[in-house]
Amino acid sequence: MAFQDTDTGRPGAAPDPSPGNRGDGATPAIELRGISKSFGPVQANKDIAIRVMPGTIHGIIGENGAGKSTLMSILYGFYKADAGEIRIHGKQTAIPDSQAAISAGIGMVFQHFKLVENFTVLENVVLGAEDGALLRPSLAKARKLLKQLSDEYELHVEPDAKIEDLGVGMQQRVEILKALYRQADILILDEPTGVLTPAEADHLFRILDGLKREGKTIILITHKLREIMETTDTVSVMRRGEMTATVRTADTSPEELAELMVGRKVLLRVDKTAAQPGAPVLQVEDLRVVDSQGVERLRGVSLDVRRGEILGIAGVAGNGQSELLEVLGGMREGQGRVLVNGEPIDLTGTRSDARTRRRRGIGHVPEDRQREGLIMNFYAWENVAFGYHDDPAYNRGPLMDQAAIRADTEAKIAKFDVRPANAWQEARNFSGGNQQKIVIARELERNPDLLLVGQPTRGVDIGAIEFIHEQIVALRDQGKAILLVSVELDEIMSLSDRIAVMFDGRLMGERLPSETDERELGLMMAGISDTGGDHDIAEVERNLAHPSGDPHKES
Image (cartoon, rainbow, N blue to C red; front, side):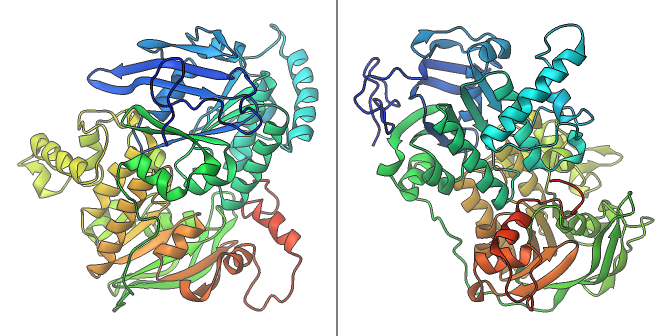
């Protein structure tokens, strides 16, 4: 289904494919011709050609490391292309930096937000777009315009709230408001739902649809094929730095797009046999956590995970799942009783560190790979040793055996298809999905008795998702116990052998995947118990849209 660029003859750009622009001679909002970019020996983009028609949502998909974010960073002025040209609304445009991109009407919302956490929403929106030396007039103008934009595009957010007090869904709205405040009519979103709950993602796409109706042009970079199929007008596929196809979304299917992305057929479901659970590995009784503000985040949680099974924890982010993983992983103190293989785990902080947990056979894939799973300015081989420095295989007498660590890293890179395959690359220079592969490889290859895994496929492409799921199931089939936390309900449903639902620090109930559905789980995630009776569904959906778990804190 690849189209040919009628001007250059290169593959990758469809001739005016979007609804409303077929055959009417409309000028593309964006046209890239022959874009190439290399980082040393790694060619991130090779001879890319693409057209994006005005007033459409254009998806760009591809494996992690395919070059999607690099291409958009060139368009936004973060990188300078080695070759090629950029045309905005038909006019050749030089974009040497992000200020030039903003002047050309381009805004970008990055996967990892660019916000000052101790600034207010209003201050973040104005930052870099002040009218003069005096800040007060700029803030007054911004406050008025912010209200107009919020009302027009359903981007409601409290202007005086500090970023650090907002959930990720609200923070993303601030990023979009920043772009609109700078009068962007072309909006690039890089993996926008990677940190959102399903309810937040649904609201985001309603916002994008409203922006499209107002004539905005949107480029959506995502690895989630369902989002592509439901949201976009046109989709371009990248593989290994090249644009392989551009198709009308209505003319394709998730299976075809997955094959175009990966170069082979991909199984879009988890293929696993029935669990054969054994004795309990993890037993949790009346676990409680109180945070530094005195708020009780875990309220008497009791559960168990047996050998040879995956227990999935479903819930809207902020309802205690993170605290559960942190206590069990030795990152936070708690109260209660926790047994691993029948032996108690200390929760007081004196002997409850993460190193002790690893020695007890507990592996931990944290929810936030950048803050908790990696040291971003360390090399890949250093991060593979992260937390396992005292492994005899990594040491030679009193000194660390760097050659052994690098050899082990290279083996993990090959097995988990980390790209680029360079043990000497700093973690920050890998794409988000490849960063995740490094963390997954480090923890799974340790063959833990109990694996704690938070958001295992966040920001990961479809081919890598299939591989990561296979590795988790393989660990289960070896008789290991897995505690899985994910905001992706379809991942919870397909990967888990049992599902427990958390709300407001409590377990609301437990289900077998074969005996429930997303609607029932969604109700439980909103705090509707097994005996809750009839409830207003609209009220439930409003609850799901506020994922902080704290009714006094807007998400």
